Image (cartoon, rainbow, N blue to C red; front, side, top):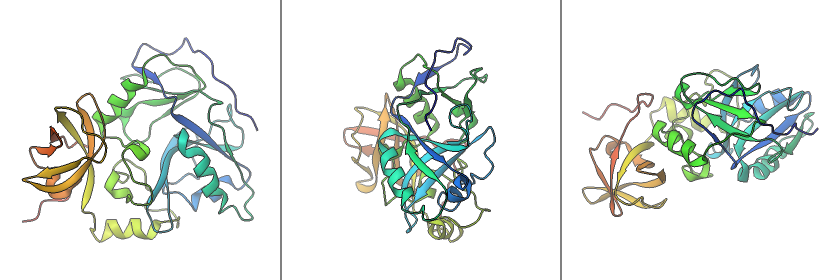
Length: 286
């Protein structure tokens, strides 16, 4: 089943937009597609309708493998669920999901490059025909599919850093990151009331036993942008490491006691944690 291609769309309003050439699409088709994915990913994908769900694929040990926006779009792929994910992850996700296909009536295909993927954000929804709201935050905006957008991908990168939204392996560690470290709970990436899925046990235990020790935290960067993996220190003690960043904004994985510090050292830069309104941190110990 081939997806429809991209087109220019003069009906988009004047608002910030950017193409996302590093995003790809995986198509999951067949009569068992919803029940198949429902048992494997962190969010509820049974009734997507005209919306989208942010979901993660986990290892059996409950560690992050990849994440994506799952949506339906009959105009692009009838009788299918599409996964909007980093293009570099698409072959790996197809391979991993295929391991669990067994007798399920599903077909998995990497459709990256066949449809333009872009982002639009601002105060009004875009008018293009194939749009899905980013389910993580209202301020995140919308994804636009099959439309060639103008703009610079760096503009969207700055936008998502200001909001504190993680971006795949730039911010997370495959087979190591726990979902609650990366804000999947507050950003609507976990359905706590659905049936079992791969990795659910560790995810639930982390939440209900209060086992979280680190968080991915937005930071303002003063000085040269530290490379990913640069240690972050507080009073000389290592408390985390730098992840992605751009133009004075970034994300750092920090121990909880460091997330509220007024400033932190990171290479030749100073980091100032900027906890967004959506993020819930545990109360500091008495």
